[in-house]
Length: 149
Image 1 (cartoon, helix red, strand yellow):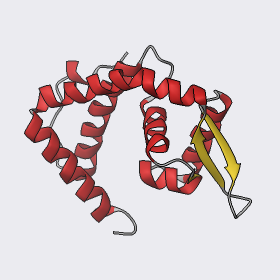
Image 2 (image 1 turned 135 degrees about the horizontal axis):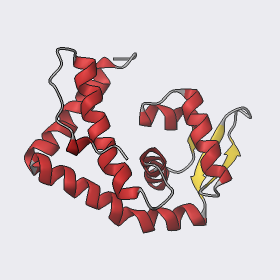
Image 3 (image 1 turned 180 degrees about the vertical axis):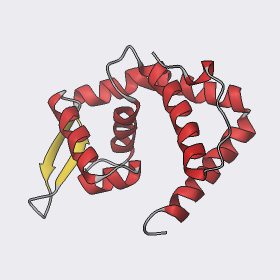
Image 4 (image 1 turned 90 degrees about the vertical axis):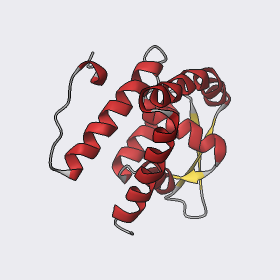
C-alpha cells in the first residue's frame, strides 16, 4: 500500500500538481484510517453530507464533493447496492434524492471515530492552526477556481 508520508515529495512549479500532491497525501491518511471498514473516504464524505443534509440530488452530491456527475452517479449507485443509501425520485422523475438507510446511519456512527482520528492526525502533522488555515484557503481556492467562480 502507498503511504504518502513515507516518501519525500519534490516541490513542483505547477499549482495543479502541488494541490494534487496535498490532496493525495491527505486522502491517503483518511483511506488508511478507514481501511478495514470497506468504506472509501469519498463514500464516508457522502454519508457525512447526507447525515447533515438528507435528500440531496445526485448533482448536489457531486457538486458538494467536487466530483463529476458520472462519478457521483456510480458512487451513489454502489452505496445503494451496499445498502448504505436509499433513493427516491424528486419532482423531476429523472433526478434521484438520496438518504442514509439504517445501515448507512450505523456505518456513519461506527466510522466517525476513525474519521476523527484522521482529522486529528492532519492537525498533529500540520499543527492545528495551520490545518484550519489550510482548510479555509483550500475552500476559498475551490470556490474561486471552480467553473462558476
